[in-house]
Length: 395
Image (cartoon, rainbow, N blue to C red; front, side, top):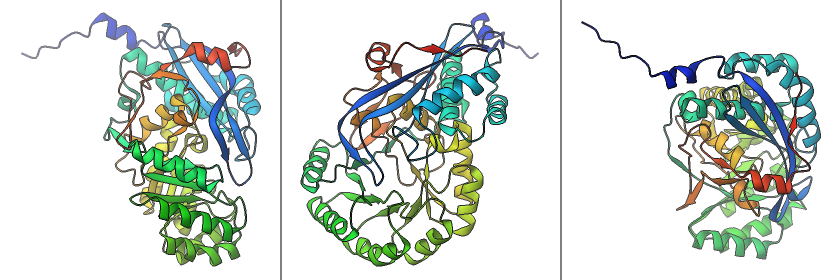
């Protein structure tokens, strides 16, 4: 005789579609101060612009997500203003009243409501996984296939442009066993001076690995001239050396370079990833929620890249602990994340937006294990740095 144990009433309620109905979508915009200036080839920031999404379900459970940008439509099309406007005007109206656990259906609804707008969609989907996971008392990783990895080696970015300051910063990180892999932002000045800066860094940091991010700052001719010099001084990886749209020349650069080349801005959706993989435009892919527009879509991008023989790198756009936790929920379920992750964003803020859930130790970042995204949001601090109260979206 087969005995079927009844599901407790509390668990039945958790799976009730009515209990998981999306009752409220709210956003907050804030500028979180950073510990130092962060320079890229096309901008520099001293505050991190963040749009937060807070979703409340009919059962009263709340989930959080983060939409990241670099302060304006410089890195990609979206800005804090457009992210927030898109959520309120186009995305929230197609979600309100629907069951939050219908992740794929909700992603399709958002795709029909707005093209691209990937940071806005990623913020919403992160909040959905957080709210549903908390409702079911399960980590988001369980909703994504289950965790394989518990932690990843974490890369720190050196982006002040002052080589002496960068050497001191990196040595301090290494001595504290926080980081031994460093990504250096270049494309800011002439390549000759940047190669000299990199040479000093590599020489000053024995036992460490140095990666460079050109942020689309070089021409093809400059790549031909200076990538051999990067190889000679021991650079481990070169990120997006030429313009995002120029996959043809990125493929040629990749073929000539003995240093692995990573595509970032040049591949957003899975179609971009497939085209880049087929063209051999980069041998490494940087994974980011702001590019994929959602957790499941980022996982698909990883699969497409792997099918083309590309290695995977856990990219970031300086997200707080909320955004980092959403990325780690996906990264931890991938068969491999060959280059680890650069989710140092929580540490470049003078104060994170979470009070607990992430741990940095022994050169690694530990993946959260609690329900949902597994982090505790610091609402008091958010209120301090937000430009106003949480704003609800109307149906």
